[in-house]
Length: 359
Image (tube, rainbow, N blue to C red):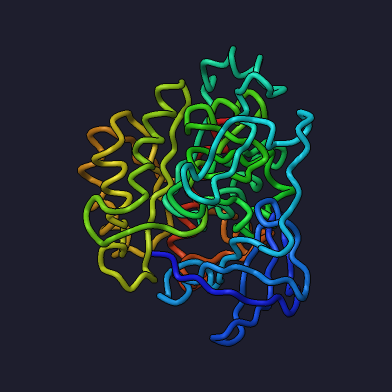
């Protein structure tokens, strides 16, 4: 069910690429709201806004925002139909919902990249890092930049978390460090749009000319606490796609000492399930050196069953601490900063370093 509210914009708080944060008053009191101008048009103080407050009221993970559905008294004009905008395509994202967005797919006939994509069949051995959570992205990028400062890094965003790429302040902050973002599946709002992870990967290699690519869901994560009930199972499917297309999959392990949930401490069950049960093709699953001895032994024991299919290389961590602390965006996973869950970010950086060595 959708929980609806009507409100009035009092102030524009801040904005980043593709998103505007608002102060809104409703009958329930003031709210912090988020609008995507691509969908709603540009909100202004005094505008009446229609809000979806369901996740906010229930305390679910939408960043503490009510979401602006529309400016009902001042709807935006239709986009120009002259082939110059990303609405000229036929890729429907968030399909059959009231807010379905029509975007130009990177491989559509109207796309300037159509010929390149039609000819693309292989990733040409490109290393691709897969990660469970969006929060791993800046740590991976930091490590690649440390060892290969000139490398072109692409991000393929899957649809397991936020669908609009605009929700991510991380992507806004990494803008100068990425060759581009490709949104796949139901996700939208990237520099390029793709219908599948496969076409997203091919676009990363052949359109963005990436040397290395990161595949992860957008901000947020769906999970029920059961073996199979989490959006990160898509990691295993991404490994299969990467291997099938002639890339080299590198799995970023979700390792934690700060998560209070037993199923995520040490090596998360998300990594063990996605890489151990869903991924049918081999991958490299880098393990950082320098972890505390008891944690290292626990990780080795947890990963031992995966060694029959995957490689478990050890990765030196010299210089990674400095790179993580110099990240252009704040490092945070589920509210925990770098020093509150150091092993998590170090494992992501180790995967980035391992991939960088393949370039």
